[in-house]
Length: 93
Length: 231
Image (cartoon, rainbow over all chains, first blue to last red; front, side):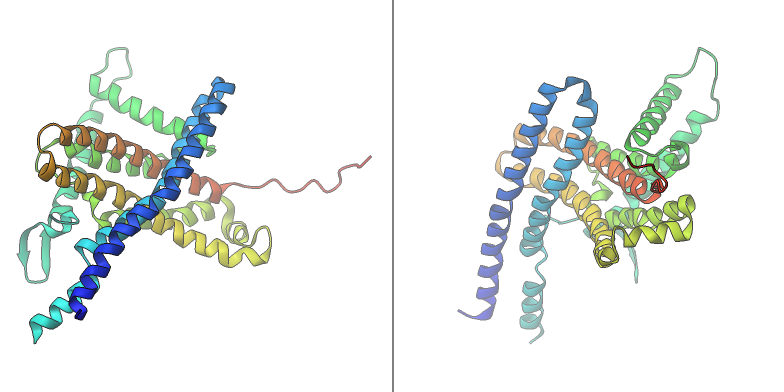
């Protein structure tokens, strides 16, 4: 396997794994956050405005970890610096 | 398929490039500025008012209330900056209903610029409110050991603001692009509607996070009661 194939395989497999594995943690975290917010909403409906706002901000914070993984895998697939380097070298020769 | 609207270039002259990000940002700025000017050039204080004035009043009042609820006591002072952030990001997301439009917030340059604005504004408002000493002292609280962590958190949350907005807007456009090649019939419309919702939520998140950061920087802690009688 030459270095070009190796880089392609490594990039694609890693991109899949990054999003796949990276979504598990945020999914569990968001589930916990929403379930806790729902039970506190059921207990104290008066505080719904504060709870909802805090929930949204918290969800965005949790979700951003998944978004980071997504951005990394998108970079690996569409704007891979190692792949561009290899392409530049092979065409330059 | 392209990663960001930076790659669509309308006009190029040597080093100068006019890409879709800049063009759409200018378009949004024009819409916001000219629209606000047109609406506010004849304001009425009576009972009869135009519907556009009503719309602007709703936006301004709601923004002010949200800022106040987070804990800033004088929302008028922060309204221009925070309200502009919210309106720009919200309009950038809302305009995706027009075909051929690419949200400029789907480019990392735009979101990085917005996050840098917040990065600069937080210490600025903090110093204005508490003075140099009071603001700089907040970095060594509760102990001196926390100084590097506070500095790192300042940088990392700026990065997080930029990448969060970029990732969300970019993923919306990307998912629609992928779905158009797989199921081009009805499903992309559903995802576009979801993208609209996500865009509005992200605009709100960006606004509320900036407000929370400014509120944390300007909060004046009460001095500890020293001569309290202990029984």
